Each structure stands twice: as C-alpha cells, then as structure tokens.
Length: 416
Image 1 (spheres, helix red, strand yellow):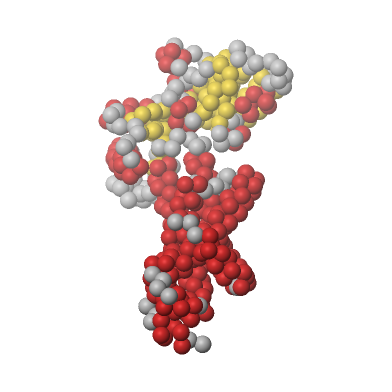
Image 2 (image 1 turned 180 degrees about the vertical axis):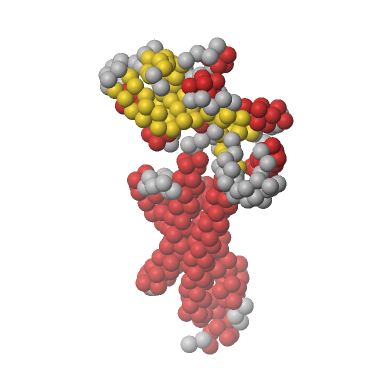
C-alpha cells in the first residue's frame, strides 16, 4: 500500500546523507553499466566471428594434397600426392547419405585471361554446379555452370566481379555473351559472381571440370575437393558427423595413395565446423569471464547498499526503539528499510542500464573490426539483470532490517 509518509521519510534520510547515497548509487550503477558493456562487446565478438564464417558455407570441408613427409612401404618422403576423378566419385558414393553439396576442383593459377586489348592473370578452376553453394557465392549477372554445360563440354566461363572490372572497362555493358581467351581458347561468359569475402575471392574464373582438365592437360587429376554435409539437429552432432566424415575420407585417400597413417602433411583438410567449434568455445569462455567480472562488480555495489543500510539502522536505532514502544509492527519497520534499499538499488540500476544501452547504441555501429561487429546486448537479458539486482538490493536491505526489529525497545531507547 502506498504511504506518503514513508516516502517522505525515505527522501529525508537520503537528503541527510546525499554524498553517501550518491556514492552507493554510483557503485551499483557502474556495476550494471560495466556488465552491459561487457555483454555488448561479447555479442560484438560473436557477430564478428559469425561474419567471418559467412564467407563460405558454415559446414564446409575442403581437401587438398601435398607431398608426403614420412617414409612408408619402401616409398621415400617427398612424393607428390594427386587425387583423381575416381577418388571424388568413390567418396561421393560412399558418403552419399551424409553429403549436401559436393564438387571437385581442377585448378590452375596465374593463367593469363584476355578480352580484346585487356588482359590479366587469374586462377582458373574447373568446378561442378554445387560449388556455388559451398562457396556461398551470389550471381550478379547471368547464371552459374549447370549439368548441361558439363555433359555437353560447353566452353563457358563464370567470372568474378573483380575480373569484370579489370577486363570490361565499359561499366554500362554486360559481359554476358562476350568471349574471353583462356590459353588462346575462347570461352563464352555466362555469369558474373560476387563473394562475401571480397575481391580476393573474385579473381577466379570457373569453367566445367572436364574442360579444365583438357585445357591444362591434367588428365583425370583434381587438385582439391569441397563438401558440405547435411544439417543436423544440433551443433555438437554436426561437428561429430563432420569429424567422422573427415576421418573416413582421409583414411581412404591415405590407403589409396600409399600414405603413412601418421603422415599429417600429405592430405590437407580444412573443416570449418572444427574451426567454428574452437571459436565458439573460446567465445563461451570470454562471455563467461565477462559475466563473472560484471557480476562481481554488481556484488560490490550490493555490498555497498547493505553497508549503508546497516549504518542507517545504527543511526536510527533510537527511532526504531520508539516506534516499537509505540506499537509499530516488525513488518512495517522491515518494509521501511527494504523500501529504501530497493529504491536506491532500482534507481541506480536503471541509470546504469540506460547509460550502458545508450553508449552501445551510439558507439556500436561505429565499431566494425574483423572480430567485433555491432556490439549490442539483448534488452530482455539486460532488464532481467536489473530486476535480479533489485532483488539482491532487497536482500541487502533485509538483513539490516531484520537486525533492527530484533532490537528490544528498552535497549534501543538507551542508545546514544
């Protein structure tokens, strides 16, 4: 029930101890303020990491080969391992129920590409249609390679947006339908792609795999494999499935190409889910540390509230004794002290929350580094934290209040 007299008493008490109340409020507000900022930075780091993983499909697996580093079955180290179409077909068939997208990669770097009087040196890759989904690429113009292009051995090319800018100076003219020269062989441009990773991923030309193997005399050899696995119910299951797939695939490749099981160099694998798992585990530890620092700061503020309430009870011991002698109920005394504790904690807590959210709102969009993007905090989490703080403030006031009601009136009246 609202009591004007009680509120007047509270404000009179605060007015008598302005500096003490202000410093206590600052300690509480700074706790919430720091916690909000730490949570915002933690979320910003998570956003930055998520942005980095957007460059490719989040569950992508990339495979390539190098030279052996261990002697095995009479074969000296230093042998160059080269995968083939047969390897690609076998892995696809064996793991068909787990695979979402797949493509081999017949690559050649530093190839001169000509268009009329313009030329440049770029990477050429023979890839399958599903490679677009693995690389998470977006078509700006035209279309991507399709199955018909591969079956009919069409000499068609998909160029990156950077290559378009380099070779096709007329910005108003579309390159679709134009012919570029690769190894003096004309290829019809059927599409232009962009990549979220930027221009460093847009300096490649994609052509059908059989054509790439013919043009660069690769036979049945491929320089890489790329996969994504079908989505799973949760992240941990997805990581487990991807690790099982990688283990099975590398075991097959090592057996097929006579590579020692302990040779870690010959077969290179980049499993994005394993990288994501490491980053998210790190993020969990960082956010847990931020929570710990913020909560410790808040606890320091709550302890300050408890201390000030103890001092207030001590100063008003005689007053409390008179109230009890006049018949005041213990609940009314407890309510009076609790109300003051809750009031100070709530005002300070919401002040810290508002300043913290305002700072993140103003400064957050300006922070766009590689690992911190748009730091922000969930408002529901923040407001819940404040209410928990208010509850803690109430508990901080309860114990001094309980001490006050246990004082006998005769003892309180003798207090000087």
